Image (cartoon, rainbow, N blue to C red; front, side, top):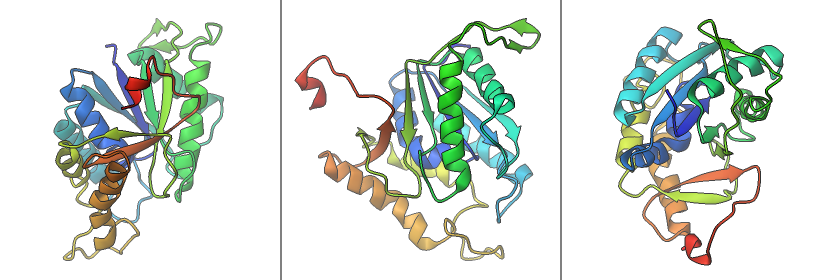
Length: 238
């Protein structure tokens, strides 16, 4: 299956939190989108890997993505080496996306920056035909996405561009809240984490509102780029 967009996250819920509105919008425009989680989030303070498996599947259904896979890398301990790069390369060559979305370039959780660099490096290497990979016993052809964009997570990184997600924020929040084990629940007996507070829950809206305000729309999601954004005309920036 060839996808238009493939979104990677170090943990289940990273993609929903960083670019869920953008994904929902692109799907509404007829684009095919997939998600690949690097780990199962097994080191998370709340919930468990098994619970998050179910939550990730529910979130994928809400967003309407075509496929979701998990590479079962070690939460907290995966590294950017040949073994892990090849695992990502197999996914890139399997789905042949034009656009790849991945973690923030720098963030509070160490896996986010690591995942960002791992996926970016693998996307480049995936285009080298002398790197040989197989999937389901068949040799894969080289494939390099046209562009890699990095969504923004905990830290307020200045975006290089903002996508207008007006009309899609509700679906984005619904997909995020599918991770019932991870976020604010006043009746939960689990320890409180930075993302399991009422303040963080409210921030889902006010950050999107602030980014939307900056581009003259109701809601927005920000991204950073690895190379200049090119446009055909000045009107493309309106």
